[in-house]
Length: 453
Image 1 (tube, rainbow, N blue to C red):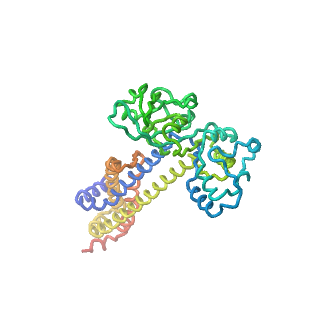
Image 2 (image 1 turned 180 degrees about the horizontal axis):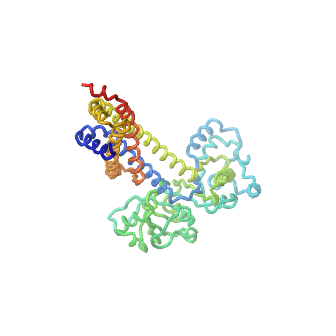
Image 3 (image 1 turned 90 degrees about the vertical axis):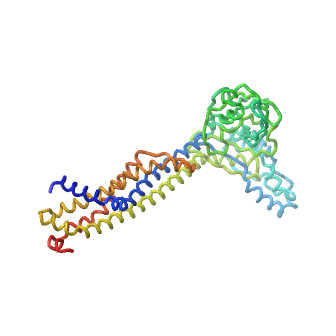
C-alpha cells in the first residue's frame, strides 16, 4: 500500500470521528498554549528586569543607614549605659575628620578603628545610631579614600506640596534632592533644558528638573514645562529641565513622576531633617564591586564608629531578579510538560480503544497484503496528526490569550520560537504516545483479527 493511501485512510478515520479527535487532543491543546504563554511570560520577566534596572549602572552601589540597627542599638544603650566613657561617634559629621586617621585610611588600611567605640553614657549608643545621617562630606570621603570609583552622589527623597498655574489645588509629589553626578549615575536623559549643576548645589538655587509624566500633569505638556515656574512648599522654583520618558525602574524613585532639586535646596527648603539620605557610588570595574563595598564600609566606619550601614549593588540585585524570573519560567515549563504528558496518555488510551474497535479492519488490511510496517505507519500517522492538530490549535490559543494575560498587569512578550517549540512538543507527544498502540495493532495476527466480534 502506498503512503498516500495510508494517509487517505488516516484522514477518513479522523474526519469520521471529529468529536473524539478534538477531545483526544484537548490535553495537547492546553499543553501547547501553556508552552507559548510560559515562554512569553518568561521573556516578559527578563524584559521587565532589564527595564527596571535600565536607570542603574551594573556597578552601582547603594549605601544607607541600617534601620534595623537603630532598634538594636537602642536596647544596647538602655542596658549598658551609665558607667563608660562619654565619647560618641560624632553624629552626622562623623569622627572621621581626624587627620591622622584619614592618613592611615588613605595608606591602604580601610579598617575600623577603636577610637570612639567606647560605650557612652545612659542611652549613648541609641542616640549615636539615631543621629547617624549621611552627608555630602561622606560622599567626598568615599571619593577620596576608596579607589576604583568613577562617581558618587547623595540622594534624598520625600514628598512636597506642589502648585502650578495649571492646577487649582496643591498636590503632593515626589521630591528628590541630588547632586549633579546623579544624572550620570542613573542614566537620566533630558528632553529639554539642563540638569542640576554644581553652582545650583553650592548656592542652594531654587531650580527644578521635572519628570516627563509629571510635567504633563503639572503643566499640560512636557514641552510647556521647560522655562515655566512652580511652587514647592510655598517657594517658587524655575523649571530648568524636563526629563525624557524613562519608564518603570527598580529603585523606588520613578524619574517620570518626580521633581529633582539640588540636594542642598531640597534639604533646606523641602525635606529638612526628616529625610534619610542614601549614597549611590559607581564602581569603575564590575569585578571589583565587592572590594569597593568593603572599602566604603571601612570609610564609613571611620566616620561613624557605632553606625551600621546597608550596602546593595545593582548587579547582584539584577542577577537575583533575573534568576527569580528564570526559576519561575522553569516551573511553568515543568507544568506545561506535565500537561503534555497527560495529553499524550489521553492519545494513547484513545488509540488503544481505536485499535480494539478496528480489529477486524486491521485483519482485512492484513488479509489484503498490508505488512506490519504499513499498519504501524497508519496508526502512527493518525496519532501524529492528532498531536499536530492539537498543537496548531494550542499555539493559536496561546498567542490569542496574550492580551488577556497582559490585563493582569504581567509583562508578556510572546516569541515566535515559543510557537515553534510548542508545535514540536505536540507532534513529538502524539508520535511517542501513539507508537505503542500502533505497534500492538501491527502485531495482530490476521486470523485472530478477523475472528474478533
